[in-house]
Image 1 (cartoon, rainbow, N blue to C red):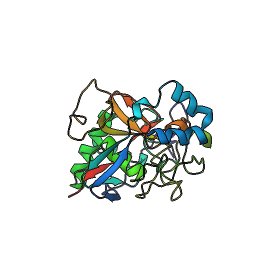
Image 2: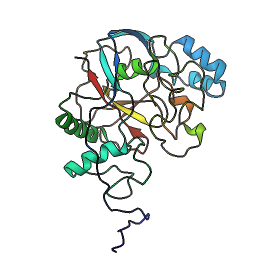
Image 3: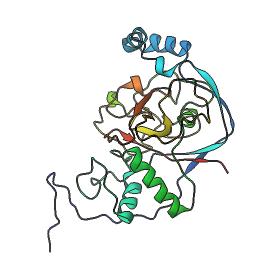
Length: 273
């Protein structure tokens, strides 16, 4: 019997059998308005409950990127219940011979992580995946806009976390959880789910959006979603090696579209038909 080929880390390089690309489980969000961004009242709650860092953020104007809080009206849309997983992404790689994510030890993902969110993918990689996925499913998926992502994460009551206004390390995978890596999608469901039922909206991985990182207020249809090779795009949700400070529905960072990180993944969205 021929021994399997191993890479330097000892992972077997024998390809895994890919699964068939199937339409994602999507959650419908009706047309309507919600409060986007962090209010002064939100900050006061954080100062009361998270005083070890919230006062420092206030003193250093670190909440400014999330302010002012403002009302945004969105048309109906759909968002994926879970982020795209290693197994999902591997099918794309297998089919096209596309480059592997940065953190994979060989041609495929580490054993036992098939249902973990894929990370180490740039926005450029994500757009290539979506184009391929649409061709396979005959759907019209895309990345969520920044506003759609926040609406799905917090609902309509301007909550700080998907489950309410108090952080709970048992509801998401952040540095406080000490997992030291990603966890299978849905591991914290249903207690960590958002009001619409979306899982892993905070913690586990940052998620790409299709919106450019620009000051608030957010106004739909103002070129925030245009393609700019040198533009910074919004990622949302915090991740496994970031603390609760960034595991909030309103926390936002701007990242170049070619950036690769072991903490950034993505989920799909779609305009409602």
